[in-house]
Length: 194
Length: 80
Ligand SMILES: [Zn+2]
Image (cartoon, rainbow over the protein chains, first blue to last red):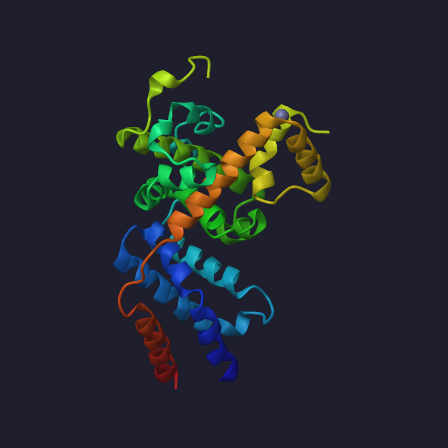
């Protein structure tokens, strides 16, 4: 019993990050809570198969990702790779000249933080098709390695890399559109050659 | 050595800490000597930080942790 009580205490510390990712996956607070509860129950019941000393956090995220994919009948393993428009390389970087400097602070790092609101970043992630959204969440938000993500999604590492690459570019394009809607962008400032 | 095109192509893997140590060092050497690529690197590093910070900012529903503990507790009782 002792090991299982430890599970609750150890796993509990990851509950907030699991919830944040569950929310981006399900796009619904009540479904997200259900998903985290289901993840904990499965983890609890499968605890015998968990090897002490291995990464509990990665193990929980793997259970949650699998639960989400199975429960919501996700297309993750039979993806339509074409469901995302091609976006040019370095999309946002090449458009930074169009941002109205007078509306932004001096430091580059602060600028980036105020360029996009929390909601815009969340919306940009959530509007990605699931095939791209899950790898982006697991990498950009949760910091898992390509190998860990490949194991969670049961796809090759090369597939993880290409989905991350395309998903990130699509996200940059959405963030740019949001900034445009907020009046931060003056496209006449862009060099037409860029 | 890595040139500008290679550096930009591999920037993403570099930021993901997924390059071999040798290759990462070649990219670092290029970044030190090239302000254009250095600018692209800093831009994407800052963008990563911003996305991570903002996407993580999430309030838990009221009573979330208690309900989570309760559902594990119930499962234990149910199993006995
Ligand atoms: Zn260069």
